[in-house]
Image 1 (cartoon, rainbow, N blue to C red):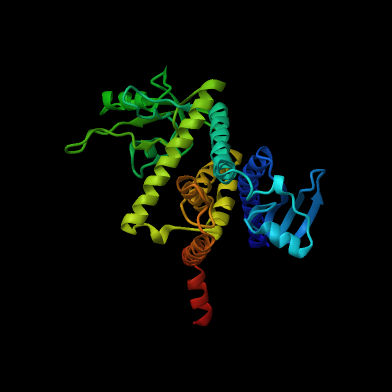
Image 2 (image 1 turned 90 degrees about the vertical axis):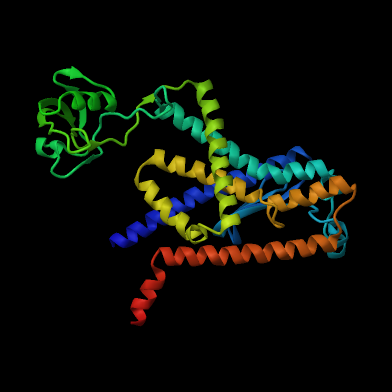
Length: 376
């Protein structure tokens, strides 16, 4: 029963994460299409048969489909031969609202709008987190300032003997209040061989513990034997949060570009690439840590989704932009046959990547060991 509850929790978290990312991405395409005067025939969250559908006053059919592994916006007249195909099938065609009839700049904007929407989502989420949590406080060297909250206690250390535990908040030393971990470190270094009186907040308890700082070992210094992983923060106003959200999105994107370039040029890290199974697993784990962690996870994935869709691979948004750039330079569209071959290569590449990441996912989740155990 516990495993079933965990599975349902993981799948629900995955559906939430993927639903937010896909809906924002496709909404970017949809809104750009409307702004450019293109008629959107279908807006679908997921693929396959529709579980729920309705039609708005503009004639767009909105769907929630069976397979929640993506989504799409089907626009009127996507291909240059769409009019002939519609007439042959006896369907209405609206030249003024057809995607293929719009200028190349409009089509490029519609293609780029999905990734742009993902980047904007990340900026909004990062900015909101900074307003809620504040931003890390740094010292003169740009290093994060840690709080005197115990993360780990080393075995047989002065802290362990004094009774300190992970989660303890050390608020005073020898009766003097402290706010940062560096202040605690200074007291420790100044009192080697002596006792320190530590004022500690543990939940709702206020304790006073005594730690004897041992003499330094050869080549070392006297140690209390605790670490801190919690950074001090400072409040952030709206304007500063917006700037911080843009900055954090840009830094995240730059780090991902560097990482992707490293994988492409060296092949290192290919085995660590993951897909839907890994994302589902991480979604459940992150959701367990709370709403803040889940929001940050969505923001990171949103940047990742935007970057991946901008890769110059036919069938992805970046592939469309590549064709449109060539069209703008040539003054006429790329030949239909060349586009067809490009899409075939793109689909083959995407299938190969999907097989690879699915293999990695199954291996990392222990599926092969489980099968081996069953066979054994």
